[in-house]
Image (cartoon, rainbow, N blue to C red):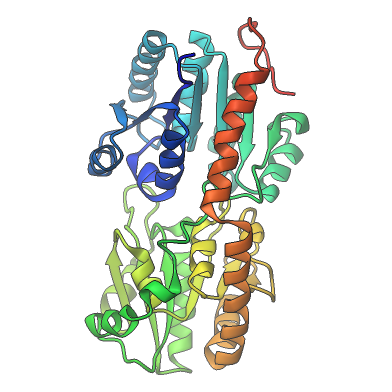
Length: 398
């Protein structure tokens, strides 16, 4: 019997490189014939070489762009018609939309999409309606749907984007769990002092760290304001910002950028291949995001024994247990954010207590071996339940 032929599709290779490498490896080890598709990028080349996996480049842009999107759709349709995959599986909004349309038109029997966050939540007016409609269309055209958190699943059902019977959460959530080999506090304990010396951070300092895109919707403006206020009260705190700026998509305010550049106690190091090294050098993880699908970086930080201060928004409430593994605050609330950070700055005992609980939860619920095994099992389960003939566009998910 020939192997299952699977195509995973995302908008940018950054998603494959940062969120899905262990899942792709698990798929290959299960004997599945895997092809990965995304826009071009150095991350795709490195991943392909490391895993010996077939990749196909189809340019896609994250922002709505009718002419470019039509070209991408036509290219994707031709590719899927030629390849005749058993299963196509998309993640990220733009890839999800284009794949849903192309897969439905071509008649791929099993079309899967994993929702990883709703862009429209923070938009207004016609753009909100349009983006919300695209999520609905993705749900309508695919045969099987997943969300990477229970609160996101509930939102999609509550907003009538997808029907309740058609969407599930695999295991306890997250897109691919935590690589506990990488995010191992014992493995990186010796690098803590060296990393701090490299960044000119005193050994005695309390270090707050953010990992992710440095954008408005990640709450960076509020984080910088809160940190500026906290520096008036505590002179031994530092802020580490790990991740890329995106001035063309979601720019920060001029005041925020000036503070990042001028404050000697803020270290913005850009995208790094090994964020775990910087997590090991830190004491508090902060995610003041406006919206998330789950917040995988929270459980990665938890695996490194870091307590979290985060916003009580969809997705994040699944990653952080308030007053157990971290502290949750309202989004866009600088005063509440500063107060929660202050509680942890002042108490090493509280940091250790919450950090230990975060570690236990990450290891017990979000081990990537378990999560990725469940994803692979889901492919075979769906394939075995698939009828011999499918009516084009008909939902077959039970």
